[in-house]
Image (cartoon, rainbow, N blue to C red; front, side):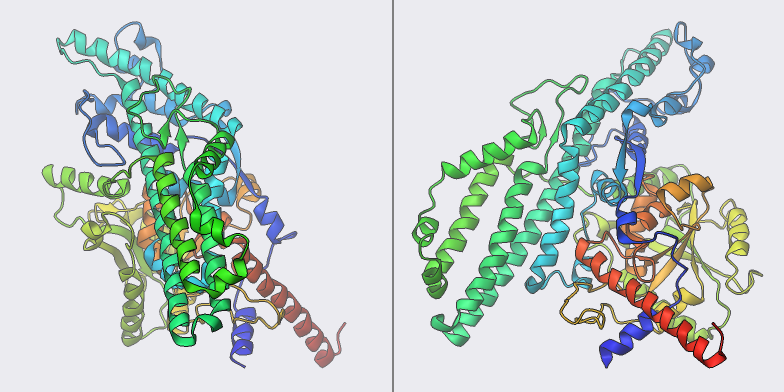
Length: 616
């Protein structure tokens, strides 16, 4: 009955009518053409050539940088400031960098684009809070862990494709060529002013992209390694409990389950060891050196790295595994032998991992947090406001709740916000200053649930002195009736274990349903662009409250994704069309049952109306 009630609520929940041809395959086939080096990397680089802080460590380069008076020249035409022969150019450096030629762009599916952008920024694939909401910290859900980790690997497999590598080299070298023109113009200007230091932007560009890749590769692999080992360790602990409780002779099935978890996740981690790497071969200014990292630099193509891994495994002694290979059944019945096989596998693969990847690299805080620190400091040093809280503007748009109901709502919403930051290096340093800047729609003269009026209000408010300096100013949040109700009358956090439409199917959907807020995207989009890349997007995105500060905000300020990208890459197929993170195939399959059920229910309701009214 509980499952049926849940299904009825979900199937009857308000939702926009699906577009013609709306199904999972059409969504998976959505493509977007984007530059291989995403624009946020170039924006961050333009900060780097003035501030000089490496993305992966936060340490400062020892090379000469731009001076404060030279920074504005990035956005001024050469003809305005440069000496001959550079003053014949009427464009700016920033224009040339951000408008990548077609040969520097690729077509990419929406989900890969979304996850690639996240990893490229140096974010972890999934935060600790979200991991727990999805119950992936329970080893019995190891198949869901496998699925999500496999999605992460797909990104690096794509990046390692020879065709993608060639475009990446081309784009990097295009930027290097544009920087060479700018640096020569800057150095000529310095010579005119008797400044001795010369800036080498091409070397700074290579340093920066190397650091960007190192942050992406190291943070992703470390996260991957830690999640796999946590899951395997929990499975081993469960197995030991079963042996103590039931005895060795009665723990065969426990050994089998634990062994399956260990085997599949270990093999996936072994693939990650040679896949989560980035090549610099062919990049302007790069020369291979013995000092290079083993994970970012000159390296063999992906298939040959796989062969190298196999060679290392073949050269390793595996006594426990060799003893058990002809007696798997006996090994599962003998705890000592079973433990020996697992522990040997873990230890030996760690040795091979070190040979493949070298010593672990220590990372600094995530780069978007470094940016918050640096811009806050600059603002305060230059007489900016003391209120440096960061976040977004949020409108209370529904007029129906009482003050007590609003208080209860905000308590629940801020409880979600409090979950933010687990496994995110440096988040605790800025967490105390994260907040939404609230605007009461009713007292501001905005009609009930009127988003268009809120847009007009925000366009004025964001340029007013009341707008906090660290607020994101291109989009804002609203709490309308639907988002208010999502917290006050919430659905269960997951689909019932046995959906009514498929009594033999179990769907891993924990954490897929919860309180959400609505993000309003103010960007103007051409109708044909939305139709091709994000069909159905109406400049609004529902997103779980727990993802506002640890995912939405960094992706927006990183200038690599817009709400329409989260819609197309994750929210469109969700039963309530809420962005809950990057979905796995099993999640999408489960959501599909709800769409089918809603369609069946709609037809049944139409037939009921026909019978009651006598219409056909």
